[in-house]
View 1 (cartoon, rainbow, N blue to C red):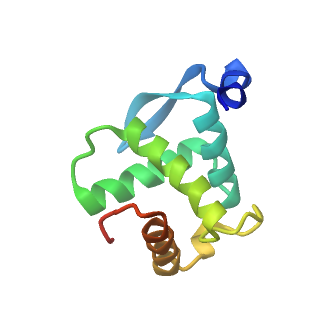
View 2 (cartoon, rainbow, N blue to C red):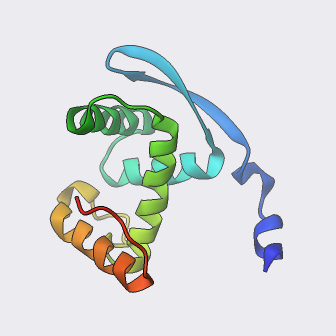
Length: 125
C-alpha cells in the first residue's frame, strides 16, 4: 500500500512559494506543488489565474468569517474538498464546467450526504 504513496514523483510534495496580493498587500503563500496544481485546475475552470483565485477565496473568506488564521491551510483543505467533491459527484469532473455555474447549496448537500455515508461528521454550512 505505501508504495503507491512513497513512489510518487517527489516534485509533488516539494514546497513552492508564490506571491499574491490579498486586500492590496503583497504576500507569499507556500504550498506543496500538488496543491498548486489543484488550485490551477480550479482557477482555470472559472477563467482565472491562481493569484486571482487566491484573492477571490481570501476576500470571500474574510467577508464570511472575518479574520483568517491560516490561509495556506485553508487552501489545502479547499484542494482536498475539490477532489473529494469530484469523486462524490458534487463537482463534475468535466473541467470545462465552471464551478461558479454550479448550485452551491446542491454541492454542499452532496458533500454532507457523502460525509454522512462515510460515517464522518462536519458542521452544516
